[in-house]
Amino acid sequence: MLTAYLRAAGYGVTKSGQTILADTAAMATRARVQKAVDSINGNVALKVNISDTSSMLSPYTRGSGTTNYVPKFTGTRTFGNSMAYDNGTELLLNTTTDAGAYALQVSGNTYTSGNIISNSRISAATEYRLLDYEYSRVAIIDNGGAFAGGYNFTLSGTTPVHAATGTTSGYYYSTGFIRFYAGPNASAGTTAPERMRLKDDGELLIASNVDAGAYTLQVAGAIYNTTGAVFAASSGNVGIGTSSPSQKLQVNGIVYIKENDAGGELYLRSYFGGVNLAAIQVATNTPLTFVTNNSQRARITEDGDFLIAQSSSETGYKFVVNGSGWIKGNIKTNAPTGGSNVSWKLGETATVSPTSPNRTIRVEIDGTVYYIHAKTTND
Image (tube, rainbow, N blue to C red; front, top):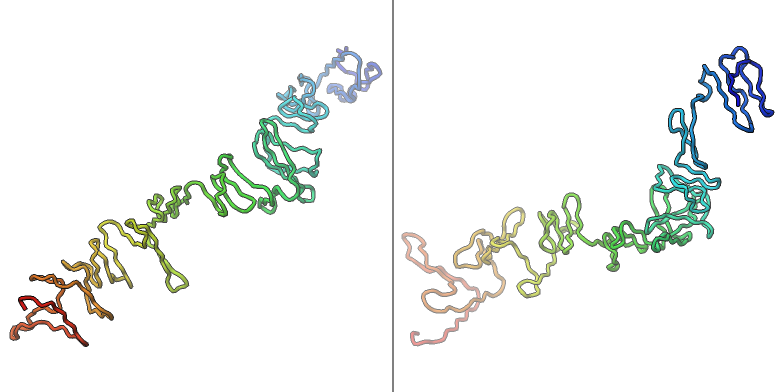
């Protein structure tokens, strides 16, 4: 054991054929080991009086560890085990259990902020596994950027099962897009139902695992945008301007129908009152008004009176025209029922002026008039 200080500059101490040199005389107070001992049988204790430690480890730096662990600094002057374990053929991180002939093995989640590139094509002897995920997929790109095939991953119990898909399926990242090749279906989320499923025929299923047919977009549940402008409820009702439609189509606002700058058409079909017919229905106790050029032209009141150029009913009359009328055809009414009141009148008595006698307003008929009357005892 060497216990003395190395003091004599330029002189060496020999141990088993190896030489330990001290500094020159000018640096005798700053002795340093110039040449390491290659191998010495037995124990060697070297005590050095150091005044300059800028270029060497402190004599108090020490540590202990376990075989095969990659060491790390555990303090400013101590060493210990790191999480890296080197068994000579594989490098293991966060584990000491060798899973097989894999150069790098990691126990736990792995995160990368860059790309992971495989420089080899898939072959029967090459295996890629993603554990703990029921459905996963890996695409392999060779050095030239060409698609080299892929693997489907599923879980059979707890055992990962994979199958090569060839060069016509899978996906890869190209110019900012993810591209799906012909063949596989792509899905996201759980499987009963899948949150989103893109089929190989171009159909997109959202929150549904059942293909309803040849529909490009299929949604199970309500459709809603951020402003509620359009809302499709799961009941089948559609609302525009409302998020709670009570009918098949409910519009909160004005409906504008236009086609080719020449107007549009509106087709109605409804099962109303037990009869299959077209119907326009308004709210209870509300008239139906027809407007052109920002003015009311006609109205059907809530009691069923039909008014033209007038907004209020005339007592006892279901049809009121405020203005002249021209009828190119026949007018048919019920016959008088007798009594002082009759169901129709062609003339009224009116006073023309204070100096003129009363007279009956005439009805002028241009054509032949037929009057048929059954004779009675009063005739």
